[in-house]
Image (cartoon, rainbow, N blue to C red; front, side):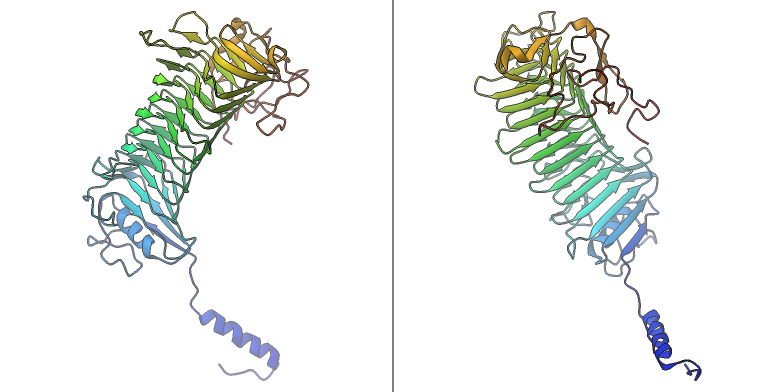
Length: 487
């Protein structure tokens, strides 16, 4: 370039620096592959950075193979509508080119793979019961959205739909019809994190944790876990040793297991399970804990446990260690459901003699034994604080604030489980219920002692003189346009 003598030296040098900068190739922060075939084909050259198969296409497997070896911070795989059937046989060492789809360990820390489908109704990844569907390796960060993951049957035994050893987020997706020994739908390995947002986990089967087997940290938000069956523990969710699970705005329904129809929290005293603004309904246990069988630390806040049953103890909750209920409704559950010679007690709640069970401002009513009108809301020692209401108290032993923290409620003032607004079904309080405006000056609080400013539906507390007992606030108005919690 010839210099214009009218341009000052300082400006000329800046112009040369800018031209030189433009000539330097820029490092791309993101690579995008768009899949254009449903065929399960491998990449023809895993070193060229191009998603390309021998049939001149970009398959889902080829895109993942390339993403595994790229060094860019983010690789996005766009997955259009279609059914992607995995047809390649499993390979030794869980490699990229056969069996399940493997999101391998990244070359550099922090690298992410995104798989973005067109919606769970139209983008389907189907393992055809030949292996698992998706494996996420240690240290891998991945996001999956808008897909259905189905028909996984892993050769290694666990995580039929998803086997996670990394940091995985799944949104707006369905995990269904998968089978595994631990985790039919999802297995989350120890020390690892999985987040499920607006997902449906259904019709999966396993020995333990049919819907989800969580050995690490689980965040479950605005999701549905239904119709999963475990031979042993945790039809909907199993929480393993040293594991943590937080459930928000979610529904567990029609799940079944030997112990813990919806949720089993295992017997390590480091476990923590938090259930917030959620509903467990119509879950069942062939032994104990129709809704929940708890052997760790359990916290239930602003939630509903309804219509569950156990053939032995604890139609709603069976507890052998430490459980805490805040502003929660336990209604219409049944123990000794099969009425056999083994018997059963604690239609709503069963808690062992040496366990801890704390109830604060909770509604525990209309629970039965043997699917009859023999009411049995609780059996065992309950520490009660604030103001709690029961349908009957014949088999309960009250400590804490004792008789000063408990009363009786009329069953005809509790409505059926139904959609009363919000993301999860609830039992409404009817006019004249003893639960209305009857809590103490302490008000409705959570496990930290903080004031709870909304009921399970998201309707504001307080709607009257004081907040109401249980998960539902009578007279509180919720925006019916957005009643399911989505804008």
